[in-house]
Image (cartoon, rainbow over all chains, first blue to last red):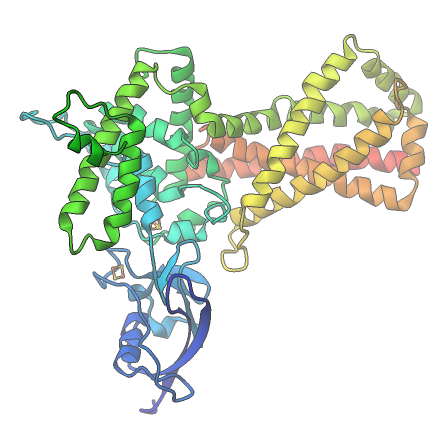
Length: 254
Length: 272
Ligand code: SF4
Ligand code: FES
């Protein structure tokens, strides 16, 4: 292999949240086993575009570099995924990088995923155990249940499933698949189950679970292999039952 | 009044904080959030406020007797939309296709069946309650649902994503077809019933033949695939396996009903 082999990147850039986006091409010297982030680091070291003009380094977000934190999600060759896990050798060339279009762009490839955290707040995706005194140990969880709940707990709020969902966009207020699955996770927990109805009612609020149109892209793209569509169907059933309980009344509606 | 004023006035007797007060203060504190790295306490304040808001909201909800119907309007509207698609619209569709299939057994048989349907007691009530109003509701909300989607099969060309897209396309085609069909074979006729010769006249025109063909097939597709979504929306099929089998089952529904519909159209058009 020739030493001077280069990889072409076509990057959609944006200087500030309100400015227009533009495309800029970069040629990056090839190294074996490089991934998209290592290529971006090359650009950062030598911010010169394909025309030989000096430009500002491309900004992106990252943290763990091992597909666990979800910070580095971007659209690579049209498909949303983690850039730290995208190996250059396995991609079609030239490589197109874009910020995820579902989220507001902060700068270049950095997006603001605040709406995902708002969604987690809407469905109360936590277990309230803070109190003024020691509550003691919680109830035990069956091992079988723990196993599938563990799969749900792998979600890293990366936003890839929201980006792939045709119903999550600026015209709709749908919270997206991730938060629905998180509501299921915390409802499955024996202590979390004590507040199950609050999460279900959160799912029934505007923008909640009813926004799902069953395109099932989410389950195909989730890097963590989370059974999102099973979670959605399970929460569909649970919210329906909760809606009946709310309306007709039930001692178990709590 | 916001919380800051409330704190200022705290020595002047009891201070009442309403849910709106706390909410608006949270929104205000969000404005400051950009600086939270300089003023970390602002983030803490916000967390405290959010906790306070959640507790207050819970308590008010409990006093109001839980979440009421109006609070989940969007959810309930969408559930109604899903339900109406099957009951009564889907059931009516099957009945309509099957009764029209009488045409295949001869003109007289069809006219007898059409006459029977036409002379059902309380026909107007049935028509409005079971057909027109549910379809109108389903169609109008459906157009909105089509509008909010941003289709992306180019980059995510999975089977279900295509079904999602086709469901929206066929929904729109069905809407246009049904409006025309109801106008032509019901409203235009006033209190008269439709008969064999009317349909024969319409369908022997090649343009209308294909218009009806496409209209009927997309209606049936929309129903069959809608049945699949219905099973998910009502939490019947949860596992990937059950959803897959539901795909095959609804495919059979599509093929079977398509046979009934297409066979009838051919009889009207070609008399065979
Ligand atoms: S569910 Fe999967 S794709 Fe969606 S945010 Fe979580 S990890 Fe990312
Ligand atoms: S940097 Fe954490 S997932 Fe890529």
